[in-house]
Image (cartoon, rainbow, N blue to C red; front, side):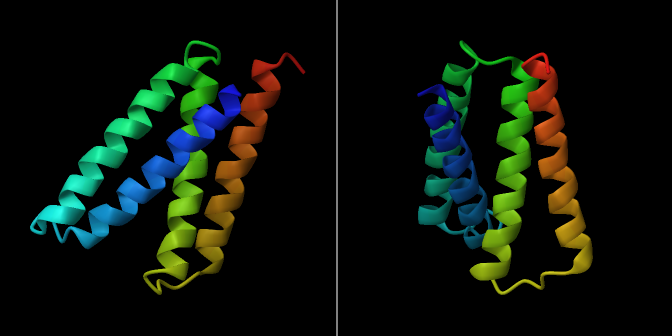
Length: 107
């Protein structure tokens, strides 16, 4: 259940980040309000997950997976180029999250 909360926090963060691009520097009202709403929801759910998960692990998962998904949204929605460097960056982020998970579970 707590991973669903953290996963929802990640998805809200990705939507908020995507809307940030659409806000054109906070010049457009509706995307700007969406950014605020989705980031508030994301931080709220992230804070709820901290009652059960370590802050290092939860934040790393939230930031890392959120970053990787935001890159993929940029490629799929905003037609940004997917380069070898972006691929390697995503692999590094996911590898880091896996290692943090291993250290937080005592493996």
